[in-house]
Length: 436
Image (cartoon, rainbow, N blue to C red; front, side, top):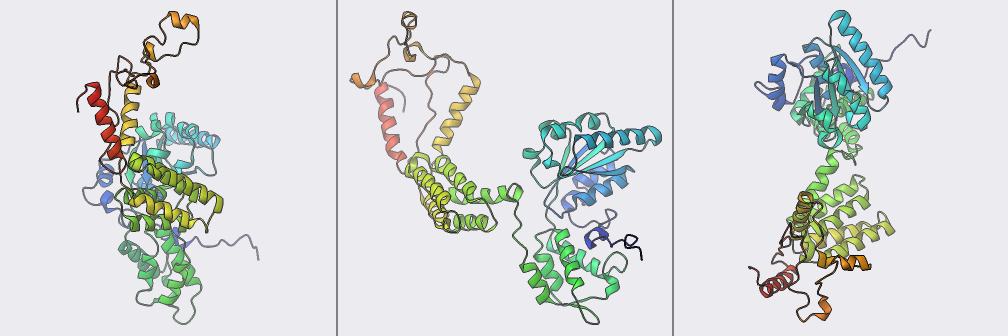
């Protein structure tokens, strides 16, 4: 027997891949009647570049294949993980020959386009612009962060959502019943609730659901084989949390933590922090975000918040996990219950805007240093009042460039320690003869 003559069957997820929009499940916000992508396809004017953004297992590759069939284009795949600019040139050359000889366009599907660096992404641009290829990129990452602006500006972005449990359940039932592409020939009988359990534990990922069903089917015995709830529960229990430390879920969780802290909800804040740690997040990344929060959302309302956050980060660095989890928890709970103020953040943003508008506004002469005779002769330092030798402590001295004029960037809140700072600044402005 020739061992190389036989070929293993394709995985169930590949065999059950939808062949047209009628078989495609989910994404009704894009493909339902009158929805954006459905209208776009109906127009027949497929753009030269599309980005499909969504979690794993939501149909990005499948949708790209269906699009190629709709526009009658050759479907070519390209992996950003295993290929580079050299392979881009070869694929483009083949696409150009195909178009010249038969007038058939090429839809180039780039999986994980976010893994390309800027130079690699730029390699597609001229061929997208001249119509040699229809580029369809797939990414699990936010294109705003991961796709360079030149390519993004030439692309239509469609956001795919995690599949609902009902859609995944329908897909599993279809796979179990289909005798040609699915598992129908095995005559498997699923105990009530078994498929629903798989669907519910798949986190909206059709590929995970089908792979899990295939794995379970391979281990079934009996006549007919029986898929039991207990077996499904055991398999799905072993699946880890869906989390990508550099991806969209990473940003979703840190956003949830940040907003819970800002709203002074200690219990929810602790939940999101615990979930990030359980999912394998770098604890030092988490602590760096807490240090930032201490300045951005608490600031001088409680100056100790920044000190404690930095100390917490040092403790986590020293102890590591699991021992450092209490330092994480202590920091989270302190920040959640501290008085809140974003006035420090607002002040630096306002100051930065003036710097951006007038980046080279000259320093007033009286504030300039005068280490040489020439500088003194030019007036550097003239009129400067040394606060410690002045009865008013330099109170009436101006400190802004003349082009900008006096500004008020920092307006303390009435919360915590900032209430005292607010009183001091109000006194200072009264003494200077300024408005309230």
